[in-house]
Length: 395
Image 1 (spheres, rainbow, N blue to C red):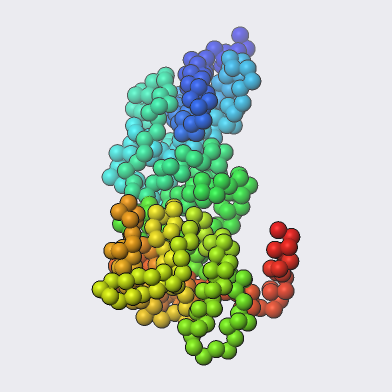
Image 2 (cartoon, rainbow, N blue to C red):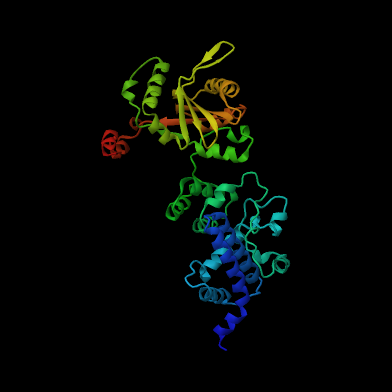
């Protein structure tokens, strides 16, 4: 018996274990359940990790197992030796999801250094003995007790994308960010690769806000932070209509009218899942009337979003005005099943550090963003942009 034939005999039981998990997973995957497919890869990854990292299997084991699987399951794709190694790395990168791992017994999983080499684990042998020759795909993954873990998004992300995300070892928060972006935007592998390469997580232009301190649900606060940018290009606003007016409220009314006339384009610029409720929305409490500039509803946040327009530089008084609107909206307009309203000041200029300093003492969720029009850009950059009217004709 040559070496190759001997390896096939030795690793036949291991291949049978993986084969059983594959067949179970294919049955469930036929129902369109991506969760089960990930559980299969996670379970197989654990099986491979526990048997290879401590030398239980010899060199060439994964090649032999893959060869057996191809013979046993003709036409099988996705289980080469290289892909089995990827499953192993997937498991090791997300070991906090293993209900029987020592990592999940820690009071708080390491949020900074993740994906460490499990060969250094002193409990590997005990885990291997407990694991045996079976892969329970239905219980291989357990959601950790972490308030901000993106459960739904995690299971929406295909395995090919997870192989890219698991290479990020800086922090769990970074992984959560790319998982959310992939699930929310249905990114291709190439699109995800570009985001990671460009360090989208490290270069987020998130809005200066108090969302994290005023929105108690960590996941909802994270969504709110990611929902709004700190600056928007509103190139459909005709600034010539504003001109050299003295009354600043007149300027703001012109901007408001331009937004209302182009509300679809504004929503596409502002973000997804926004529904326009109205402008100069009438609010009244104790006989005192208020008319906030723009009111939206965001389905993702399940909350009203009020936008107050300011054509000048940010002032602290704008937050007090917004605070009043939010109090009335929560008391008189918000439905029982909705989350508290969110307020955004949209102005021409704002000192980010100053905004973050003064906004922290307000107990309603608020943020401050700026906007630009094409006329605010340098001539060289503005000339490179296509004409809006020409684009409209093309569309």
